[in-house]
Image 1 (spheres, helix red, strand yellow):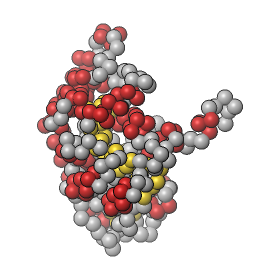
Image 2 (tube, one colour):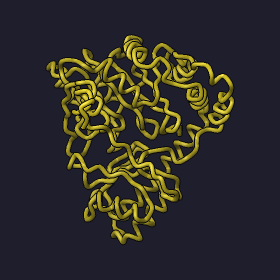
Image 3 (spheres, one colour):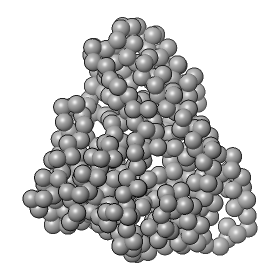
Length: 371
């Protein structure tokens, strides 16, 4: 603590990202990065953009990137907002669209950055408990909205860290029952098996979809995120962005982002590989006695009936494999969140579980997995 801090700083509990190891040789299955390198078209575009033009500011509107994103989703460029990773986009969303007298609704087990943003910007929040099966209860949100007890709603789809997805029918039911407030659907992992809500944007002016190029486009190191929605919502984000940083995306990020959105063949091939590896990983975990929640993401959420999550994470790290463990909330403390790696990385994890001598029997509760 310092006497020089602003008052708001004293009340902050910052988000803690997954470990980025400083030593070589670890198998990294803890931060949901893509296990495959980005499109060669992306690398070529970045090389070409790394010219003497770097002395000039980038396009503050990132128009080329907006147009590439809009073309992919069948929208207009004016319905697209871009930022320095989806976390920055979300920060603007919280400030521009979700700060109201009534509380912002979110799941109690969800992306742990949401409460951080809420504290930073002074939002009142209400966390709605997940159901017993860890699913999101859409009716809980609709009822709160209709009763005037919601100033906005934010839900990841698929949810994090559970990986479980809502159907497009459920998302539309939420939108139809919450027309007077903004509904944010955070789709960081949607490309691995869920249905995007972007197809509903022209019918629901209260819908904002937030997405990233970090996962399915393998550009976590480039930091490109975006939002899709009605032009009125996008303009609110632009007003906040231009009051904060008029140039959030540099020339390399814009060039790489455009190339990534245009290389559909690489995108389809890579996400198919991840989905196939996820299915293999789930079967292997179940054979080692784990219960695995149904996942539509590039990670799985799993627990073992006789070994705690913290214990397993520590023992796996001793075997040079990183997975993510969340101590809070207490309900998910037994779980591990395991990123889907390459087939070889997944097999290495399963071999490590063999080395730990976990019982090679199927869990008492199995699950059906979204492809």
